[in-house]
Image (tube, rainbow, N blue to C red; front, side, top):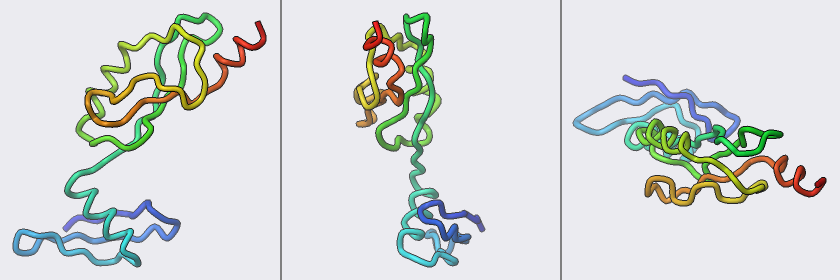
Length: 123
């Protein structure tokens, strides 16, 4: 048996998942969203990534970024290695794409700070 804590809503339901006849049987969820969370978590877990990428700018040597959506959990190490190769040479702002469709995942990586753009406007 596996136990999960649902993170979809504030209820934080403790969901028990038990394998019976080759399929999971769930209990403890208070809504269908909790059930969907548990099924996804056990069959195809997805995660958002937040990290930083390097820049050429001395005033801000790294830029915080995140995925615009969720990626398969097993892709995280490979995506982090790919982002370690990124070097930002333009002053970009929040929501601007840093890496489009990272590793064919269908998810873009975007900037989460305006500090580079703000520095550009002050110049």
